[in-house]
Image (cartoon, rainbow, N blue to C red; front, side, top):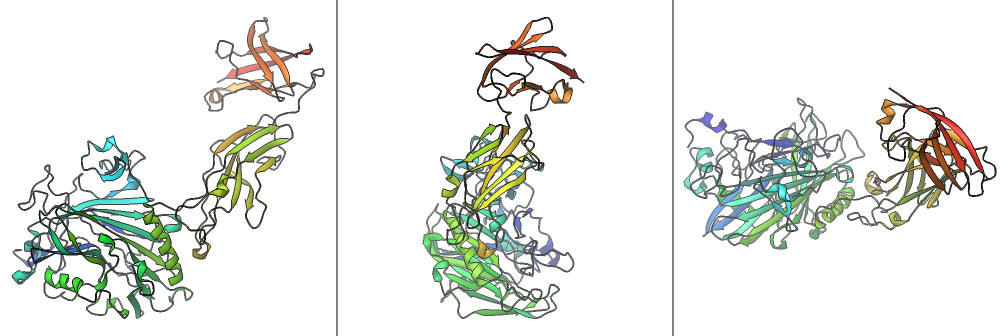
Length: 637
């Protein structure tokens, strides 16, 4: 038991990671808590969702997993009920701690042989975020964190605890920003240390003995207002767990005034019109004051649950109903397990000046009852979405369900078309196939947005750009073509002979017009071409030109990716080019066939680079005609 009231505040610090990719700002902790500091504050100026004016939030207390069960008839309950890792007046605390059960490298607790109450920066139990790692799963953040722990083992996504073994397997990255942590509830001291002194014995429940692996998926682009949280719960207690309930605890309030000066109401309800959706709603009961054309909506969708139970309860939690007394596992379990589980009609919470109606603050979105045998693993996954209308929320909900059902498969742009080029003396002819038009989006149904909408052709003076848009063809506006002859170039004038041009053709879709989402565009493949000069007659060789002449090659050019070369233009279709020194020593021999252009890489027949000098080119044709040209090469520092 604590020795004084001050002991209630002596909690070790938790480790957190903050989201950066999506509109949803949240903090992810190594003890399983999520969303702990998502709020709008007149003092800090933070706002959520990030970059938007969708919702004004109070701090979301108690966010994360809860799990309740009976072991041999006795009630046990564990949850992430903390407030930024701090115990507030000893009322509630986080019963989960970082770590796996039975880790021989960590200190042990008496009951389960695993790490106990532990909030230190252990490299074994940090909250991981995928943006800190390269494609091989190796840390690139500079934080000296170990390798990404989710790996493909025997074709399955697996948590690999051993850091020495992780390099043997490919890493698993699914969303634009994955988060991962592993935690458990096996600290035998938690209740005794952090409960109020006057609590009766029936509030004291020993840990259950569950280990949890949680992955949160966060997105950019079309899914920037959604996230998915997935829990794997493992029974390592050594006993069967009966009458189990599990779910997510969370809360969102919508405010009309960002400084909390305007009274307003937020409605919470199960979406009973379509129960199959497993969807609970929180929404502002009137248009937003700062934008009357909008109304804030939040949805919690149970995407996966043990035994496919779906959402079996949507209820208010008990944590605030016992705020001034003590934490009571029995009371909270009975609240979750009571019937009817899905509450009706709508519950309305009044927010006024930053205070909620007494007694109903935190919400449970969960599933049960079910049974877990020794060693069983169950999965519980929930999608959290935000939109400006119920219709938009339901459309986003459908997309999120598809994303999860396909293994966190993200919306994708059309396939990149295969591009080919044919240079000629009157332009560069480009052709491509139609495979992009046969693309199927893995997530977005055609009814919400066409998976192919058109092509964009880009042009650049170098392989790495900068690319500028040359032409666009869009379905419904233009005829979709598969070829184009470029004669203009990137400067608005005619194409220049012997100048390299770089083309990139992409395909794009139309996004989801009803949600006003951005279109998605394929990366495209860069291809190079050079416009040819007209061919000369084998009997009229006077038009042949050697460029540049003289060719002054600087040191920088010699080291460049595009190696220096001399071009022979206006050649006949077939000829032989022999290059000599002024002493008539053969330097190189080129056999030209087809087209009007050839190039020499300034290398001798033996592969050596020529020195600065005057050279002689003898050009002869099968018809017996020939011409002699002189040119100079100068290598300069």
